[in-house]
Image (cartoon, rainbow, N blue to C red; front, side, top):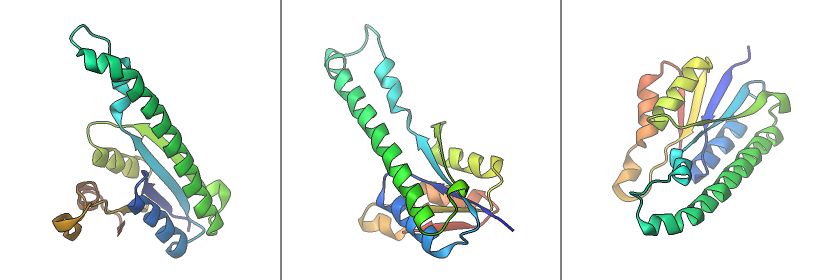
Length: 156
């Protein structure tokens, strides 16, 4: 029986480690979806109001160019992750990339996608930084793990 695996994906090392883990440890007959939630920072590029500070007006174009570069980086990173899974033995026609704009919370977007897409497993990075936070699971991973009634694999 073919299962469906959802990998919430961003450009972090934890996300890369999750792809490696899935490639090395999960069933190669399964379908895998790399799911990226696009933060709503691009909306700032369209802002045009007399209340904006002169500094923001001046720097908006720089910010928007950075956003375009970040979008290209994530597209390239998603494609590289897809190729990594294919090279690990997953069928090319069973490894998907899906992106969507961010809703209120990224964790809610992941939960909604997992439920709507009827995934059997979610594999995701822990995404903590350093110090005390390393002892705890990241808030997105924790919320997903405690909300869904399917296996959630947390990768460091």
